[in-house]
Image (cartoon, rainbow, N blue to C red; front, side, top):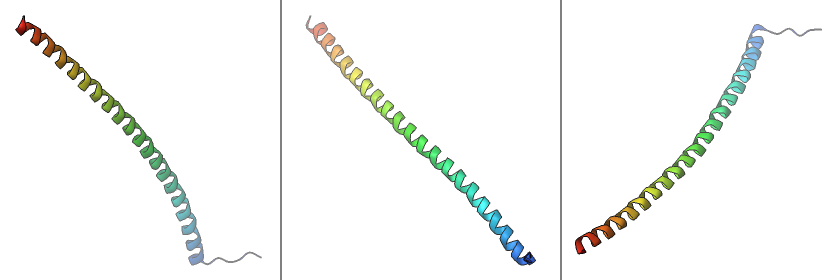
Length: 79
């Protein structure tokens, strides 16, 4: 024999089903957002390393250029 479900009980059951479905969808979205944030963090770290390498190269070139200019200036004023 089938059980009779009162309208109130039916409303509670259907609300529970909708809520669990909504929570599952939200959990999937949050997981996707978290994955995207972690990927962006990796990219930012990589870019930061590239920028630091570039700064190192520029500072080395400036140092070498300063040495060359100092040597040329030394010989030009002495000669």
